[in-house]
Image (cartoon, rainbow, N blue to C red; front, side):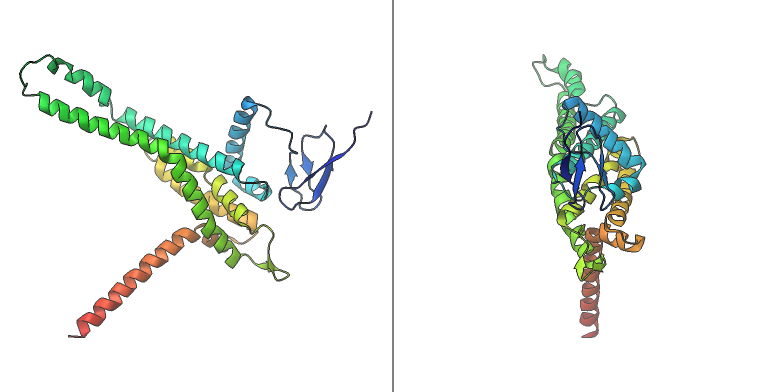
Length: 269
């Protein structure tokens, strides 16, 4: 018995795509995007499997991922992916730093201080031991608090960065029939920035993890801008790094004004 066809909108271009419920994926006849119709999340196990499959797809095949990345469909999924990935990287980095510091935790300091608790008079080493325990406790809580607030800071950073990426795309992406490409929206910019955070997981690597993470986040965001907006590498670099370029330009402009003011002040005497 044949099943009646159903339809779903392509998340990239909005074209109606017909499919049957036997199909796992649908190919859009307009833009060629292959996507899965909405069939529910399939449970927590399926969500975890989809997350790591998506993470692996971005890390190992970034060009293919961004070339087929939907530019529509909401920001809940991309933001959740970015927050989880960045938090995992921060948590692993905190774990490695704790292991590298050796047995110098606040709990260890507490047990080393224990022999002094029973002293009725002040022991010469008690004050120094208390100071060590206080410093180690503060250091430990500082690291834990940074992991706890990491999702909030990451969310703010993504949403703000996406504003400048969107502005850069509106300026640099070529017009079609007098209008910007349909992909140039704030949602597409936020998706590029969010999925470009995939290399944040590398910050969990010991030693050079943080540096590698920052470098590859910039590279992946550039690739995302190039593939989603269909521009050359030069424009993609400017679009992806538009927030940083604005900061650098503002800093250089401020230095130039200070130098110009000092020069005028010196020659005025």
